[in-house]
Length: 242
Image (cartoon, rainbow, N blue to C red; front, side, top):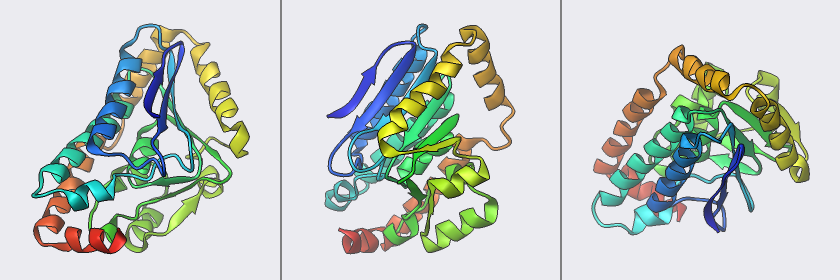
């Protein structure tokens, strides 16, 4: 259990943190480290990011923030999420996110920064941040859904399904849950079969023409989470949730 890196031409980074794959500060740091390590390996041609258990990712461990004194945990988790999302985005090779079940909060940050998303037919995506007294990852949600839907999802905390994202083109394929890894590996295999030098340059070039600086944009969002916590909204909503 935890964060596992399985090295190879198709490297797998697997999250298995029961019960719902909500990550602590250390968990996000380990995830960032695993993705960076995979991308830095010259033998890696593509990375598959997936999870075991009930869902892909439930975001941050709210209980860790609730039980912490002061703002050290908040600062830590903001930095660690920033590092994990950046590791996916900056990975030297393409990252295929294989999403099943819930993909919430930080999960959207990971999937939104991935190069390709495949999803199980039970997958759903959402940002419950407003209900938790926080903000963030709208940067990454905007890479998955149109602008007005993104705003509605932030304000109302509604979710969207894998089928809806497939219709938008942001999920490449939808598969039965028990076939998800196979589908992800098939897509990854198509990439791994290409010239690895060309693929790495393709990743670099596509990041270079991105219209939004995802790291700067997400960091801007995080500043409002600090404000909400300073004003007491964060504590109120975390207590209500837990």
